[in-house]
Length: 505
Image (cartoon, rainbow, N blue to C red; front, side, top):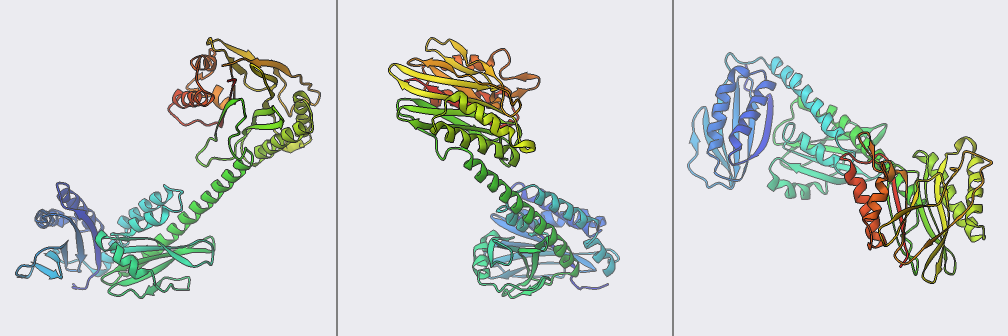
């Protein structure tokens, strides 16, 4: 038997109706980890008595394993001092304005030192590590990982945790997050840690933090040092807790590295996607226009949908809305080829049909890298009393025209999609938009939006939606279609979406 402190487990709570059941549940977890379940009822009863007397605010509960006894401490902040109690198994002590009420329970027959050590590092802690891994895997936001690390550690392993990170391998460490079991002390701790000298080695190291035993555990993953996890306790770190923290630091480092790699990939995708679209939504004098583009997927993976609206000469504009098969770099290559080819050939004076034919050849020349492309491409000429449009629909979902009377018509006959048939020939068709007429072009992210076996465009669903948009502006029409796509099914869309609306004033 020994009175040497073998382990400490602590947690913070808020006074109120839920305090007692939460502390009793925490007590049950502690005694489970320490293989002292024969005492759980007595321990919970003592914990309930101490916690029920907490009048307000937050408080900390600490269970201490002393080999032959268990001691519970309930620490409150800002309590008036009264006469201290001097009893062998319970009492009250004060430190400044902090009041700690405690009680001690003898372990029946004692517990061997080796058994306590085994239980502290045994199945209960394996469950803790598994839960910690699940929490760390639950986010791919690198700014959230330090906060999750700190809140996993406190109060199970330490009274406070500070996480330092480096922007790049070998760079200076910056304090990213601090968490203390007593939230009111977090700001003071952060100020104290700002000037902390960082250890240079790759192994856990002692840190110089006044009033605490503090340890720093490097966060190293895939051969790169990403930061440092610092833990602090008012007492000595048991060897088992050190080992557990070292194991946890490796898991934390891997989670941080994965989140950073994910964020870098997502940022690269967004940058590439922006390069394939106009810098800003174009404004055409004498034309009411609107475009909406939404990439699908959690990472906003580079998609194959694109749009463009650009000037060719005075009073003449070209527009395009297209969909490349697939996503990712291969689709992006064809998207970039299409957008730049359309602009270049249009400004060289090629007509709409000639531009589409040459783009078809350019895609075929890509060989194994080629992806087929559907495209709606047209030329707008501002004319008195409306708009004159020359239009080619190359394998694309039907373009629709809405009359002010509410009549919806299909315009432009379907022609061959691009990147499949070398011999394909294309012809432009003339379309007239009178005052108030609306031309709608969409990608299959709209027409093929799925809810179970149904598609949004089944039974001319898109035409029916457009018929409800009489007298709306181009922006209002585009938003109405986008909202209908979102509301059609509860789950997020798995396909990119592009909408182009042209309205003659």
